[in-house]
Amino acid sequence: MELRRPTLEDKDAILEMIAEFDVEKSYMHGGMGSTWKRAKDYEDWLKIVERQEDVANLPAGWVPAIQFLSFDETGLPLGFLALRLSLNDKLFVEGGHIGYSIRPS
Image (tube, rainbow, N blue to C red; front, side, top):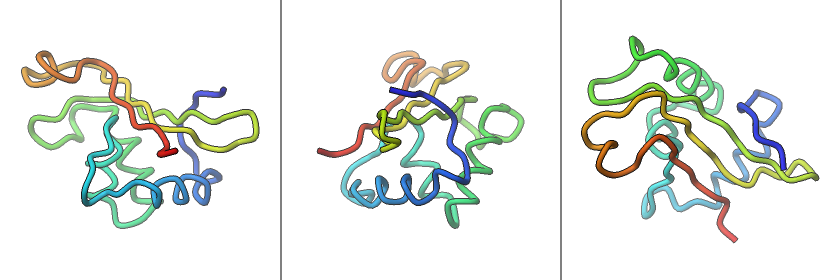
């Protein structure tokens, strides 16, 4: 398994995985659901993900985080992992430093 930041080259594989999530009925943890809902398209999502590493770029109540994706040995994306660099009061109680979403089976 490989864990790395998302890139433009990952677009088709990630969009396919996102289509498997029911975004309206379930919350994709790890920052994916909330950032995906704010993005206009994949390229915009990549920019949001990059900017979310700096607290100065975040909406009130958000914490900085680094977004990663896990891929199997064939290159199939398995899920998202957000490594939160700090915690707010809510995340301190529930959520913690790691958020994640896994590909539906």
